[in-house]
Image 1 (tube, rainbow, N blue to C red):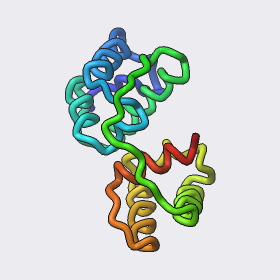
Image 2: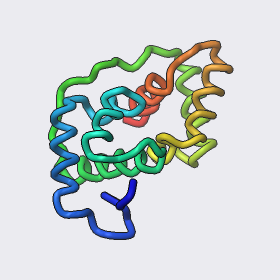
Image 3: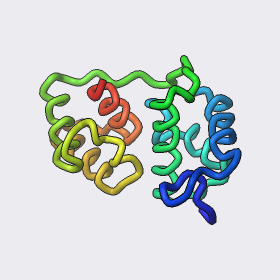
Length: 145
């Protein structure tokens, strides 16, 4: 990303939020269902963010902040449903997330971060499952609600 669209170091560029919101609405997928999907990659392309993980995290964080501020439109389409897991698997996932970032409430720090890859790998290894990062993220988001 050649310029910081949403960085904390400077205010958002004029129109950056508008472009992001337009792309989000056009994609039409809920925020919790967006990470680690082709649709998120498409959204990044539409707002001109490259392939680097920092850009992905930055865009998701900005969308999350817009949601908290009540500026993110509610969208009804979630392409995927959270996978059903056993209560002990839920506990394991909460523990793995907390091990990496302190609490489940800090989960957004894990998006597009090598620590999330560790969470996914450990969860799959300890449960015998082979869930994708998207599916594990959906579980984490569900558990955090």
